[in-house]
Length: 483
Ligand SMILES: *Cc1c(COP(=O)(O)O)cnc(C)c1O
Image (cartoon, rainbow, N blue to C red; front, side, top):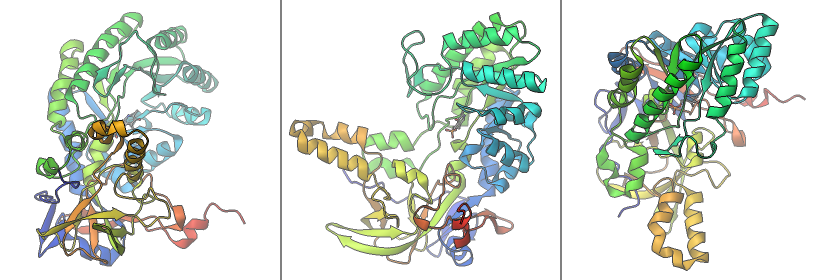
């Protein structure tokens, strides 16, 4: 079995294409983008942003018309991106007063926002309650007490939605009554009963608007959604019996998956567990049927359903272009050094896989295996899982008997294949495109090692490209230092 995901096919008709061996995005030549804007460069697609918004709205509203999509802005809160999504009909999910500020700057009103977080600050609560936010998703009894106190001080009524721990994880139900949650999020059923009692005692300051659950990210197992639906339906009925008024909404959170390559074909050459993480048939149509439909059937069409997709709105809307700046020949394979490290694409730090295409040798079929690394002075700055591989090696060295379980160890410890397949002629100076880098990228970019944050552009078929985030300059490195 090979150690690399197959390079071909990578194309996405109408979006990622090739002409004269060059990679094009939305009809724009990527190597010309690098000449115009420099490297590394994020290239977002307005057409894809609009497509994703339309895709979730149409599929979910076909099943449940009263569905509100609150885009999880931590996946990307660039103002131009937020404006496109607002124009495409989405509401917004925020996590902090910083995201509240950005959402308002992009034109969203507090009535279009839901506010999540495990430890909201008093000052943050004051801001959103003063503007009558649609819902504060409450994470603990202590937080509810703080909300009550702020509402009393402001003489305002706060809309609160309680985040429940459904004890559903990775497709397995730990059991409602057994044990406590092992995550830091949400409230247990007992805590919720305390919270509901407090809400009922203070009707002039607190309205219980709904219940909320968010299970994880890139949830590729359909049965998890079925369990979530079953759980929330039963819980909504239980809560409704306690409240003197009906629930306004049920918030299902996000976590919907996206594919991290163009085709199932790519994954045939590597161990199956990689494919389970990065490839999925679960789309919004399937989720509508298994998650939304049962809620409509059981709770009726009047209740508002809120969802909070982040990754699934964003990941396939951008590519990252990065130049090869250096190379070395090591044992069996060459090593190429990109100018983008985990400071530019933070998810590689945790070993996430992104498919790579050589933007100036896009159609070359002759390929070779190589290792790809970033430019940072940190050994985790690699496009393979150096930490996971190291753990497997040291376990096998200390416990030789474990070699019988080599495959299982790799499955548990190694997050992505250790080599890349790229065109055989790949060399220093080539531009590598990393696909599906739209989610959790701009937000987590930083200037570590004094390396300047990348620029971002937005393309569309009609107008070519426009800058939506400028490249950092050396002066930006001094902006927080006091001297
Ligand atoms: C992060 C987050 C989301 C978005 O998750 P995705 O996996 O990006 O869809 C939604 N809701 C809450 C509460 C979150 O913390």
